[in-house]
Image 1 (cartoon, rainbow, N blue to C red):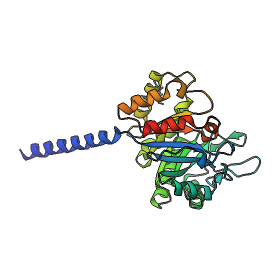
Image 2: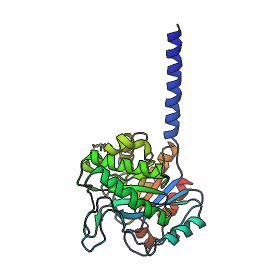
Image 3: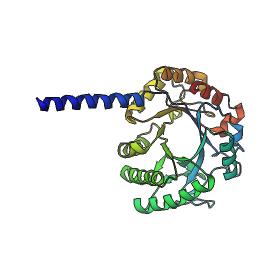
Image 4: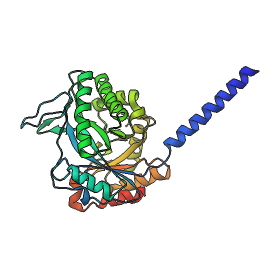
Length: 301
Ligand SMILES: *[C@@H]1O[C@H](CO)[C@@H](O)[C@H](O)[C@H]1NC(C)=O
């Protein structure tokens, strides 16, 4: 008899936890994020329209663990600034944050290229990479008064276990030291990229706050139903994660704002599954006056 009661209580308890978890995962989030600074087109934080009713993250692109010579080489976790730091300096960060209390600023690590070559994730060992990364990033983050990091390596000279341990320990240490308050990852649909990021997610998903999935890396001509099925697939791959939707403001690929991106956002919103929108990138959007940034934030508001 007592055993049955225990079992019964246990099941009720489990049912409560499961319903709590599904409530957590099925809520819209008013989060807008935008990459900035990779293309040296003189874009400033103050150029970008900021809706006071959303949480707004600028993501500086990029900090890379390569040296800054004319033909950059890997530095095993010693990060340098590779974004347009003339227009996006520490004083620009403090000024935009003091004018807009809803703004936070992050840095993205890695990126597609450095100079004219691929930017590789290429650690000598997990321990040495993490140690160098914690030291160099802590100094950059404090100097610029930043709030979070984004992981955007897209080329690898390391196996998924090395990637996952290095990045997992980096995020864990920076959070424990209160250097950052949030972390995101930026995978896209490519076999090797997914193999690396899913290994990281499966071990360290609980300390990763957002998944900036690069939906714009899908083919040109993506339809709304295709987009929604990609969203479903990636939400189940990054199970329990806040998977954000995204578009790119220069090249027309994936599902574009012109072809129904915002209709797809509204559908997800009505299902309580819109966890936020991010854009690549402010550098390119400047030319058209940030019209789609305004629209994105109105949908989230
Ligand atoms: C779903 O994601 C997996 C893992 O990346 C991939 O192998 C598969 O092709 C995807 N399926 C669809 C329909 O996109």
